[in-house]
Image (cartoon, rainbow, N blue to C red; front, top):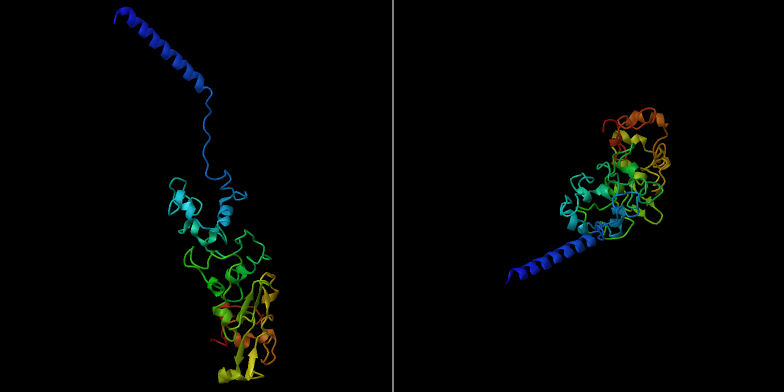
Length: 288
Protein backbone atom coordinates (compact mmCIF):
# COMPACT_ATOMS: atom_id res chain seq x y z
CA UNK A 1 0.00 0.00 0.00
CA UNK A 2 1.50 3.31 -1.05
CA UNK A 3 1.76 6.38 1.12
CA UNK A 4 -1.11 8.12 -0.61
CA UNK A 5 -3.50 5.25 0.08
CA UNK A 6 -2.48 5.13 3.74
CA UNK A 7 -3.17 8.83 3.98
CA UNK A 8 -6.68 8.36 2.62
CA UNK A 9 -7.43 5.52 5.04
CA UNK A 10 -6.20 7.45 8.05
CA UNK A 11 -8.25 10.47 6.98
CA UNK A 12 -11.41 8.35 6.58
CA UNK A 13 -10.96 6.65 9.97
CA UNK A 14 -10.40 9.98 11.66
CA UNK A 15 -13.57 11.36 10.09
CA UNK A 16 -15.56 8.34 11.25
CA UNK A 17 -14.30 8.75 14.82
CA UNK A 18 -15.13 12.46 14.84
CA UNK A 19 -18.65 11.84 13.51
CA UNK A 20 -19.24 9.01 16.00
CA UNK A 21 -18.01 11.05 18.95
CA UNK A 22 -20.10 14.00 17.88
CA UNK A 23 -23.18 11.81 17.52
CA UNK A 24 -22.71 10.25 20.95
CA UNK A 25 -22.32 13.66 22.51
CA UNK A 26 -25.59 14.74 20.94
CA UNK A 27 -27.37 11.58 22.15
CA UNK A 28 -26.15 11.93 25.74
CA UNK A 29 -27.81 15.28 26.12
CA UNK A 30 -31.16 13.64 25.39
CA UNK A 31 -30.84 10.85 28.00
CA UNK A 32 -32.71 11.35 31.28
CA UNK A 33 -31.42 9.85 34.49
CA UNK A 34 -33.40 6.70 35.38
CA UNK A 35 -35.82 7.02 38.28
CA UNK A 36 -35.23 5.02 41.44
CA UNK A 37 -37.09 1.73 41.47
CA UNK A 38 -39.31 1.50 44.58
CA UNK A 39 -40.85 -1.75 45.78
CA UNK A 40 -43.21 0.19 48.06
CA UNK A 41 -44.91 3.55 47.98
CA UNK A 42 -42.80 6.40 49.38
CA UNK A 43 -45.17 6.68 52.37
CA UNK A 44 -44.51 3.12 53.49
CA UNK A 45 -43.01 4.38 56.78
CA UNK A 46 -45.52 7.19 57.32
CA UNK A 47 -47.86 5.93 60.05
CA UNK A 48 -50.53 8.49 59.14
CA UNK A 49 -50.65 7.38 55.50
CA UNK A 50 -52.96 4.74 54.03
CA UNK A 51 -49.79 3.33 52.45
CA UNK A 52 -48.14 2.73 55.85
CA UNK A 53 -46.62 -0.74 56.01
CA UNK A 54 -48.79 -1.62 59.00
CA UNK A 55 -51.85 -1.21 56.80
CA UNK A 56 -50.17 -3.24 54.08
CA UNK A 57 -49.53 -6.08 56.52
CA UNK A 58 -53.08 -5.94 57.81
CA UNK A 59 -54.28 -6.51 54.27
CA UNK A 60 -52.09 -9.60 54.17
CA UNK A 61 -53.38 -10.87 57.54
CA UNK A 62 -50.10 -9.83 59.18
CA UNK A 63 -48.06 -12.52 57.45
CA UNK A 64 -44.51 -11.20 57.32
CA UNK A 65 -42.84 -13.92 55.27
CA UNK A 66 -42.82 -11.67 52.19
CA UNK A 67 -41.04 -8.99 54.22
CA UNK A 68 -38.26 -11.42 55.07
CA UNK A 69 -37.43 -11.93 51.40
CA UNK A 70 -35.91 -8.43 51.29
CA UNK A 71 -35.45 -7.49 54.95
CA UNK A 72 -33.84 -10.79 55.93
CA UNK A 73 -35.02 -13.77 57.99
CA UNK A 74 -34.31 -11.86 61.22
CA UNK A 75 -35.48 -8.53 59.73
CA UNK A 76 -31.97 -7.14 60.20
CA UNK A 77 -31.63 -6.12 56.56
CA UNK A 78 -30.73 -7.86 53.32
CA UNK A 79 -31.49 -6.13 50.03
CA UNK A 80 -33.71 -3.75 52.02
CA UNK A 81 -32.98 -1.81 55.25
CA UNK A 82 -33.17 -3.35 58.71
CA UNK A 83 -36.57 -3.31 60.43
CA UNK A 84 -34.87 -3.39 63.82
CA UNK A 85 -34.20 0.34 63.82
CA UNK A 86 -37.82 0.88 64.83
CA UNK A 87 -38.80 -2.61 66.00
CA UNK A 88 -36.30 -2.73 68.83
CA UNK A 89 -37.61 -5.62 70.97
CA UNK A 90 -36.02 -9.07 70.86
CA UNK A 91 -38.80 -10.35 68.59
CA UNK A 92 -38.50 -7.43 66.18
CA UNK A 93 -41.59 -6.94 64.00
CA UNK A 94 -43.04 -10.19 65.35
CA UNK A 95 -43.41 -8.76 68.88
CA UNK A 96 -46.95 -8.69 70.29
CA UNK A 97 -47.02 -4.90 70.55
CA UNK A 98 -46.33 -4.47 66.84
CA UNK A 99 -50.01 -5.09 66.06
CA UNK A 100 -51.79 -4.36 69.36
CA UNK A 101 -50.92 -2.59 72.57
CA UNK A 102 -48.36 0.17 73.00
CA UNK A 103 -45.72 0.21 70.27
CA UNK A 104 -43.38 2.17 72.54
CA UNK A 105 -43.86 -0.06 75.60
CA UNK A 106 -43.34 -3.80 75.04
CA UNK A 107 -44.72 -4.55 78.52
CA UNK A 108 -48.17 -3.35 77.44
CA UNK A 109 -49.13 -5.74 74.69
CA UNK A 110 -52.91 -5.60 75.09
CA UNK A 111 -55.09 -2.83 73.64
CA UNK A 112 -55.35 0.07 73.49
CA UNK A 113 -54.21 0.21 70.52
CA UNK A 114 -56.41 -2.44 68.93
CA UNK A 115 -55.73 -4.36 65.71
CA UNK A 116 -57.82 -1.69 63.98
CA UNK A 117 -55.62 1.04 65.48
CA UNK A 118 -58.43 2.12 67.80
CA UNK A 119 -57.85 3.37 71.34
CA UNK A 120 -61.43 4.15 72.35
CA UNK A 121 -62.82 1.87 75.07
CA UNK A 122 -66.17 1.80 73.25
CA UNK A 123 -64.45 -0.32 70.59
CA UNK A 124 -64.80 -4.04 71.35
CA UNK A 125 -61.16 -4.59 70.47
CA UNK A 126 -60.17 -2.14 73.22
CA UNK A 127 -62.85 -2.30 75.92
CA UNK A 128 -61.60 -2.92 79.45
CA UNK A 129 -58.24 -4.49 78.55
CA UNK A 130 -56.25 -1.88 80.48
CA UNK A 131 -58.49 -2.10 83.54
CA UNK A 132 -57.97 -5.85 83.73
CA UNK A 133 -54.31 -6.17 82.77
CA UNK A 134 -52.58 -2.96 83.83
CA UNK A 135 -54.74 -0.65 85.92
CA UNK A 136 -56.54 -3.11 88.17
CA UNK A 137 -56.72 -1.59 91.65
CA UNK A 138 -59.18 -4.10 93.10
CA UNK A 139 -57.42 -7.42 92.47
CA UNK A 140 -54.44 -9.08 90.85
CA UNK A 141 -53.69 -8.16 87.27
CA UNK A 142 -55.53 -10.47 84.91
CA UNK A 143 -53.36 -12.44 82.49
CA UNK A 144 -54.00 -12.63 78.75
CA UNK A 145 -54.45 -16.39 79.19
CA UNK A 146 -57.54 -15.86 81.39
CA UNK A 147 -59.54 -14.84 78.33
CA UNK A 148 -57.49 -15.96 75.31
CA UNK A 149 -55.45 -18.90 74.10
CA UNK A 150 -52.10 -17.13 73.97
CA UNK A 151 -50.07 -18.19 70.89
CA UNK A 152 -46.53 -19.42 71.43
CA UNK A 153 -45.45 -17.98 68.10
CA UNK A 154 -46.80 -15.43 65.65
CA UNK A 155 -47.99 -18.08 63.18
CA UNK A 156 -49.47 -20.44 65.78
CA UNK A 157 -52.85 -21.91 64.92
CA UNK A 158 -55.70 -19.77 66.22
CA UNK A 159 -53.71 -16.54 66.25
CA UNK A 160 -54.48 -14.59 63.09
CA UNK A 161 -55.49 -17.43 60.83
CA UNK A 162 -59.11 -16.58 61.67
CA UNK A 163 -60.91 -13.28 61.30
CA UNK A 164 -61.79 -10.71 63.94
CA UNK A 165 -62.97 -10.54 66.64
CA UNK A 166 -60.40 -12.42 68.67
CA UNK A 167 -61.74 -15.61 70.21
CA UNK A 168 -62.44 -15.51 73.95
CA UNK A 169 -62.03 -18.67 76.04
CA UNK A 170 -62.61 -17.85 79.70
CA UNK A 171 -60.32 -19.70 82.12
CA UNK A 172 -58.59 -19.43 85.50
CA UNK A 173 -60.16 -16.88 87.87
CA UNK A 174 -63.13 -16.28 85.59
CA UNK A 175 -64.20 -19.89 86.24
CA UNK A 176 -63.36 -20.02 89.96
CA UNK A 177 -65.77 -21.23 92.64
CA UNK A 178 -69.12 -22.06 90.96
CA UNK A 179 -68.51 -20.04 87.78
CA UNK A 180 -67.93 -22.95 85.40
CA UNK A 181 -70.67 -21.57 83.14
CA UNK A 182 -68.95 -18.20 82.61
CA UNK A 183 -69.23 -16.93 79.05
CA UNK A 184 -68.36 -13.95 76.88
CA UNK A 185 -70.89 -12.85 74.26
CA UNK A 186 -68.94 -11.29 71.33
CA UNK A 187 -72.08 -9.78 69.81
CA UNK A 188 -73.25 -7.99 72.93
CA UNK A 189 -69.70 -7.61 74.29
CA UNK A 190 -70.77 -8.84 77.72
CA UNK A 191 -69.30 -11.21 80.30
CA UNK A 192 -71.79 -13.31 82.25
CA UNK A 193 -71.58 -15.75 85.15
CA UNK A 194 -67.93 -14.95 85.92
CA UNK A 195 -66.51 -15.41 89.40
CA UNK A 196 -64.76 -12.06 89.22
CA UNK A 197 -68.05 -10.21 88.77
CA UNK A 198 -70.00 -11.97 91.48
CA UNK A 199 -70.82 -15.54 90.47
CA UNK A 200 -69.71 -17.19 93.69
CA UNK A 201 -71.16 -19.09 96.63
CA UNK A 202 -69.42 -19.75 99.95
CA UNK A 203 -71.05 -22.38 102.17
CA UNK A 204 -71.43 -22.17 105.92
CA UNK A 205 -70.57 -25.82 106.50
CA UNK A 206 -67.23 -25.31 104.71
CA UNK A 207 -66.25 -22.30 106.81
CA UNK A 208 -64.13 -22.61 109.97
CA UNK A 209 -66.32 -23.05 113.05
CA UNK A 210 -65.21 -19.73 114.50
CA UNK A 211 -66.40 -17.89 111.39
CA UNK A 212 -69.79 -19.50 110.93
CA UNK A 213 -71.53 -16.95 113.14
CA UNK A 214 -71.51 -14.43 110.26
CA UNK A 215 -73.78 -16.60 108.11
CA UNK A 216 -77.51 -15.92 108.19
CA UNK A 217 -78.19 -18.76 105.75
CA UNK A 218 -76.52 -21.91 104.53
CA UNK A 219 -74.40 -19.87 102.15
CA UNK A 220 -73.26 -16.43 101.05
CA UNK A 221 -73.58 -15.50 97.40
CA UNK A 222 -72.49 -12.78 95.03
CA UNK A 223 -74.71 -10.77 92.70
CA UNK A 224 -73.55 -12.56 89.53
CA UNK A 225 -73.41 -9.34 87.56
CA UNK A 226 -73.41 -9.36 83.73
CA UNK A 227 -70.96 -6.68 82.67
CA UNK A 228 -70.51 -4.68 79.49
CA UNK A 229 -66.93 -5.06 78.23
CA UNK A 230 -66.98 -1.61 76.62
CA UNK A 231 -68.35 0.27 79.64
CA UNK A 232 -65.24 1.43 81.47
CA UNK A 233 -66.54 4.10 83.83
CA UNK A 234 -65.90 2.21 87.08
CA UNK A 235 -69.57 1.57 87.83
CA UNK A 236 -69.36 -2.16 87.08
CA UNK A 237 -66.50 -2.63 89.53
CA UNK A 238 -67.71 -0.35 92.31
CA UNK A 239 -67.92 -1.85 95.77
CA UNK A 240 -71.35 -3.45 95.98
CA UNK A 241 -71.67 -4.23 92.28
CA UNK A 242 -70.34 -7.80 92.53
CA UNK A 243 -71.67 -8.61 95.99
CA UNK A 244 -74.01 -6.88 98.39
CA UNK A 245 -72.78 -4.71 101.24
CA UNK A 246 -72.60 -7.09 102.99
CA UNK A 247 -73.06 -10.13 100.71
CA UNK A 248 -76.38 -11.96 100.77
CA UNK A 249 -76.29 -14.48 103.62
CA UNK A 250 -73.96 -12.36 105.77
CA UNK A 251 -75.01 -10.67 109.00
CA UNK A 252 -75.75 -6.98 108.55
CA UNK A 253 -72.75 -4.74 109.17
CA UNK A 254 -71.73 -1.37 107.70
CA UNK A 255 -68.87 -1.12 105.22
CA UNK A 256 -66.77 0.59 107.86
CA UNK A 257 -66.91 -2.58 109.97
CA UNK A 258 -65.60 -4.96 107.28
CA UNK A 259 -62.02 -4.44 108.45
CA UNK A 260 -62.88 -6.02 111.79
CA UNK A 261 -62.68 -9.45 110.13
CA UNK A 262 -61.10 -8.64 106.76
CA UNK A 263 -58.41 -6.27 107.98
CA UNK A 264 -55.77 -7.71 105.67
CA UNK A 265 -57.97 -6.83 102.69
CA UNK A 266 -59.77 -3.60 103.51
CA UNK A 267 -59.38 -0.67 105.89
CA UNK A 268 -62.05 0.93 108.08
CA UNK A 269 -62.78 3.49 105.36
CA UNK A 270 -63.71 0.78 102.89
CA UNK A 271 -60.51 1.00 100.82
CA UNK A 272 -58.84 -2.13 99.44
CA UNK A 273 -55.37 -2.22 101.00
CA UNK A 274 -54.12 -5.54 99.61
CA UNK A 275 -55.56 -6.31 96.20
CA UNK A 276 -53.91 -9.75 96.15
CA UNK A 277 -56.40 -10.77 98.85
CA UNK A 278 -59.42 -9.49 96.96
CA UNK A 279 -61.15 -11.26 94.05
CA UNK A 280 -58.80 -14.20 94.49
CA UNK A 281 -61.16 -17.16 94.80
CA UNK A 282 -61.16 -17.42 98.60
CA UNK A 283 -62.45 -15.51 101.62
CA UNK A 284 -59.60 -13.78 103.41
CA UNK A 285 -60.49 -13.49 107.09
CA UNK A 286 -58.09 -11.98 109.61
CA UNK A 287 -54.58 -13.13 108.64
CA UNK A 288 -55.72 -15.79 106.19
